[in-house]
Length: 408
Image (cartoon, rainbow, N blue to C red; front, side):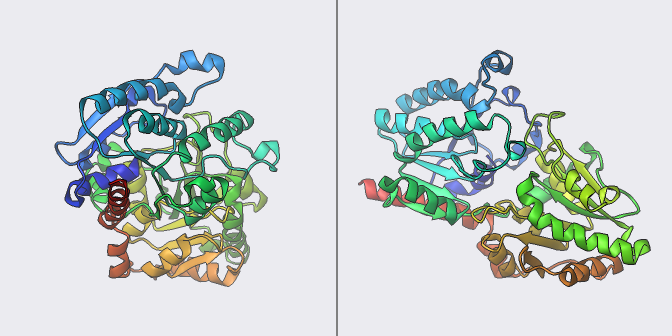
């Protein structure tokens, strides 16, 4: 959803007239954010679809919004494709079961489709993990994804992904797509969002602690982030042991760490903090917050922390809001993550991989933070343009154009 929203202001200038089909917000479990509509260009057609009520489908173990809305998506888009000529269908969502409809529409109406792989769909990442480390309903989801993914991927006309690793994995799994047009495109930096967040700050409760140096991460948690977080906890614990008065000022915030409905998530960062006796210096807010409250909180922070997954194919696709704030950033990733070279292009000083990061690296960052030595951060202008939402939209449209050209 976020990729399409940030691209809509630029699609027309790139030669593409877009219409959006999305789920009516009343059927979704996530926090509603009406402010998202403020960034949409005027005149965009938005078709809202229904979904079966969760209270009904949960009785048979199916609570996923993708499954609940599948029939309504089929019905609505069937009507659109019958009434008007469309050149392309673009799936940009992590609710992957909806993407299976692309194969049906391509066969029935002859319309090519592109899938945007923002995360892995079918993955073996958790298969050898302890049960306690796996997501809820893992075995059901694993089998469902294993069945549905090939339906969508084998028939796709093009694939976009935030990670080249995801595309490589799909091509190995499904050789039939070896010659299908693909592109690795990160999420773009969309600066208007920061102003929308500031303008509406009265709508949001403050989440940070007055009197502390607040270091903020907003995003999902999980044990796969622990390798990136552990060196930071270790460095801060050492700092507290050697100079408690100075390091006592630092408060780490991990916000929105679970995808589960509000009140149903489980802390995944606090247990790690307890291992380092750091719980008094950490706040984990498990429930998700709205997108613009997240952007406002990033702007209010004294510094930002971005931990990466231990999955080498994982890319922190949403790093750009952090960089747009011009707050000091500390980032620790898997050495293979594409986020590291991107942040280096921007000129981020404190970006490391968790195999090589040293306590000295981290102490330098926190000492500068405590002393107030960080000024407003200015990043490389060429990188800012290269990864802007406009440039990322142009990259998407080049793939769309190629697909249309090769069909004729």
